[in-house]
Image (cartoon, rainbow, N blue to C red):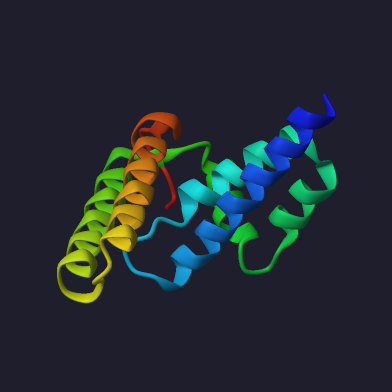
Length: 127
């Protein structure tokens, strides 16, 4: 059980770092990675979970989702569209190494899957 807990904490921390970087890098999704971190921390470390949701810079993303229990279809489409426009622009004009382009695209695919299929779609919201 300690191996699974450690693995969940490790993946949650990597996801947290990617989500935090996504605040500053256009096209890199923030909310899906922070939600993934919160879910993994919730299953592995109550202390890390509370650290995340109480954080004044990152906790907002998680708490907003928890309050509304999902995202509207329009917000999802807007978020995914904006993310892919920025990924495309970044990969075409600003990123040179192929490995970085592949990494950014892969993270975009993960963000799209999380946003499109894992995060619940709600009908009405105060977003």
